Length: 105
Image (cartoon, rainbow, N blue to C red; front, side, top):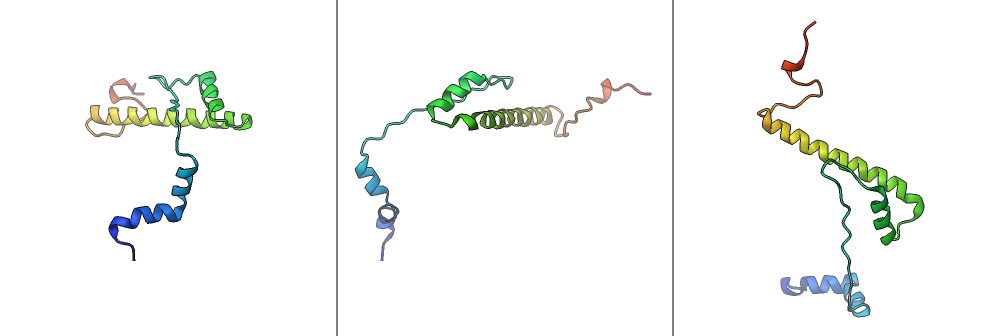
């Protein structure tokens, strides 16, 4: 029976991580940042250059870019909604504008 002390090394041995570490003792890594502007802008050429570094297939780049921009817009929307909720005292913001800006018919 494996005790608590030897549990994780035994799992690593079973999962095959130890043989991998022996085969490649020196790992190299590089950080790749996908930068977004403060208003949600994304430079497509910069995005594609980073995908090229990751060896992404050419046919997948357009879909990845579209998905990335969608995620950026949704994240900015969440930030704006949270900000407006704080400013308006917890009221959920609407797209209709404030009551003061509405004209009565």
